Every structure is written in structure tokens, then in C-alpha cells.
Image (tube, rainbow, N blue to C red; front, side, top):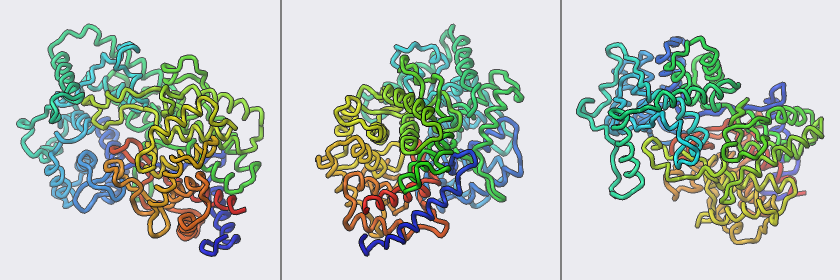
Length: 634
């Protein structure tokens, strides 16, 4: 081993300490779950929900107030990710939540936020979901919200736009929202709690119509025109199917609310479901409402002085990754902790059909979800990561493991898209023109094939022994060749960002047995090495989702450094200055407890809109990288 790095005993000790930390963090039943942190909007939305449904706990509310105050930027705003700029919609929600919690508008923090909001255009410039939140309180005109008639529930599958042509996360958010947007409920606020002060011009004079693009002929302008027609029809037209559509939405919700885990396993869908059911006349003590509120409270991270909410939970993902990292770092495959994890993971396999069945009616179930009990929405990423872990671990019941993996393999293969790639929760969910509808101003309405997911699927297939001449693998490799960026990197849909995408693809290409001397691999290696920071680590800001020039640019953090190293190792680069400096960075940043900490955010919910920090990424990815490195050194 190079003298620039460390002695073998130092490396062994670092790996042993990291393994000990992970083993100590394992739950008694065998799984791992780290905190999944989002920006302030989830906590703000939770406080506002409590006011909408009259469930305010003032003591806990004040804890959340302290959390929100701690996250405010010097300019008065709230960001979407650590070290990011202020975001208008996040700032409006935080201001509103603080005001309803009793913070005076004259408070310096509120004054600073108010000034920023007004300079940025006020509520009319906010995103659609913020406008809906304000409309529920009577602080925004429902007529200014993009239309989404409840009748979309009746659109047939062959129609270009229907609820199964949008992503699972959009679907679970939209269906309860169409009920709300049909009923248009308003909870009037007591005098003095409104938001008139946030409007740059008086509300009655504000322009709420959607702005057209500068190019008169565009999909965006086309859909704005459609929105205006729909608004007119909703106001003046006859709607004979309206009641039938509301009933279809209700039945759709009831079916998906009757299973554990909450609607889609995500906070926005659960919160919308509670509001929609109340609009439909369900009492607050109805089991479906109580069930969603229970799942929402399970997202809380509460301390003595602070309270915030996660957007969802990540136990299956964390457990698959932790198990992979431990076994690749030398923990025996029959270690009791790994065997427990394997049994827990097998228990989490989804054995019933979900929404994915609409596009793949002949495929049997067999995937894994991200959260606890999200049976309607397993995903390719979790399924592949779980089965790679199972492949490497000696499970107590080999026959049970074999059957689970056979089911999972069939499901993952069935989810391959016609373009050769893999998306997350649905196959061929790629009608990208729909991202231009006004309701989808976040630009993340769909779940198309992505580079990181395709790389993961190839790595899984390679782990099972498949090679490039296997047709699904061949098609996946072609997809990756077509989608490589000119600079040599690959885009990362679910992690930040090009470092994540490039790591995922290189691991997949190596596992499937692709030629590592081909040009696309050499270009990716050159890109990774060129993006290494002077301190030896790698980092990439979430700003790269807005500005491609920032690809691979950012302060070093352990998880992104581990991704870069794992990508280099996969491409055959297991020595040299870049590798030595990267390993040194990981060794130098390991903490006394054996773990690492990421100072910045590392995950992606919706590019450019919603970002995440997986707190356990810095626990298992550096261990994984050190373990693979040690193995390559003999």
C-alpha cells in the first residue's frame, strides 16, 4: 500500500470502526434507517395542516418554530438545500407557518422574509403547490390556480393524458388534490393572520393569469390556453360526469389508503388525502383519516427543543445499502447481523400488484419499496440494491432467498422501458411534453428512464452473472451510451448529481462485463479525476441541476467522495494520485465514533425543486469505498 495513504493496520482499523458503528445502529429486527432530511417546506406544511384541521399542539408548534428560525438565511429567505439560495415558495410557507404560530410580523426575521418575498413577486410568483396551500386559507384566489378538473379520473388509458401517464408521486398527490380543487374549501383566518402584507400590489389588483413564454408557438403556451379553456368550462359548462369522477377519486383513494405506510409513503400525498377525505364528509375519527395522521406523525424528528418532519422514511433503501457496504468491506457473509438484515428484507418484498401493473399487466409482483409497507409502489432502485445485498449474504433460509430473488428478477426485467433504460416506479412513463402543463411547474411530473437507475439495473444483472450479450443488458448499455454527456459524465436523477450518475453507471458497466477500455468509460474516468478537489475529496452542489457548468463542482463531502472512488474502482482505476488522495480524504475525515458526516445535501427528490439529505449516506458509502479499495490491494 502506498505510503501516501496508510499502513494496512490503519486501513483495517478504519474499516473495523466504521463496521462497528453501522452494526451498533442496526435495529433489533435487522434493518437500518437513517434520517431523511428535507428542506423547511415539509415542516412548514405540517404546521399549516394542523391549523387547517384544528389539531394544533402549541408546545410542539413552538419546537417547530425554533427549527424554522434556525434554518433562515441572512437575507431572510429559506433555501431548498444547505448552502443554497433563498427559494420564494419555501419562504412564503415558512413565513405563513411562523405567523400562524404566533410570531409577530414585526419580528426582525419576519420583516426580512417579507421584504424578500415582496421583491421576488409575492404569492403570484410562487409555485402551484404554494398557491393551493394559500387558497385553502382564502389567501389566494382558487381561480388563479392552474386547472386540474376532477374529471381526469375518468379519462381512459388510451388518452394521451391520464393519471397513469404521470409518475407515482404525482399521481398520489394529484388524486386527492383534484377533490380539493373541485370542492375549493376555504378556512377563513382570524383577523390579523392573513398575508396581505406579502403582496407587492393589493390582491384585488394583482395579475393571477399564467404568463406566456416569449415564443408564441410552444407547448407551454398551448397548455396555458388549454388551462384557460378548462377554467371557463368549470365555471360555465355543464359537467354531467362530475359526481361520477369525484366518486372514482374517492374509491381510488380508499383502495390505497387501506394499506399500511400512508398514501404513497410520502408526506404531501398523505396530507392531501386527509384534507380530501374531510371534504368528502369523512369524520376526523374515521380509520382512514386516523391512519394517515398516524403515518404523518411517524415522520417526526423531535428533540427537546426542536421538531421537524421528514418527507418519507427510507428503511429498505438504507438496509440494502448498509448490507452491501458491510459485506463488501469484509464482514463475513454469514454474520448474524447480515443474516438478520436478509430476513428483514425478504419480508419486505411486495407480493401484490400495484399501479405499475397498468403498464405491465402480465408481470408478476416481486419488487421492493423504499419505505415500510408501500405495497402499491415498489421501485427498481430499491429492488436492485436489495437483491445485490441478498446475493452477497448467506441467508438463513437459502430456498426462501432464491424464490424472492427469482420473483424480483422477473419484476425488474419487466420494468425495462422501450428505450432500453429503467425508470423508478413505472415503465415507459415518459410523455415529457406533459411537463409543460401549468399544474406541473415543478417539471417533475414524470418518471422516465434515467442513467443512474439503468446503471443500477445493469449492476444487479451483472451480479447475477448476466453479460452484455443478454438482450436486456445490451439494450441498457445502448441507453447509457446515448445518454452520456459530452464532458464524459452521466446525469444523476436520484442523487447529487453527475458524480452520483457516473458512479452508478460505471458500477453497472463493470458488473455486466462491458469493455472497460471503451471510450465512454475512459471519458468518465477523466471527468471524475478532473473534478477532484484540492483536499482530495469530491463534491457537487445541488446547483448543478440548474447550471450544467457546475457538474462535479462543490465542496468535498464523504458520500460523494466515496461515489467517485467507487466509480474509479469500477473502471479499473485502483491506484494513482487521484485514488490515493481520495482514500486519504476519507481516512482523515472519519470521526471518533467510526462514522462520517456530510456537511451538505446528497440526495434528490425532484431536480431543481426538492432535495434531500440522507444522513446514513456518510455512514455506509465511505465504508463501502474503503472496503473495495482494501480488496483491490490484496
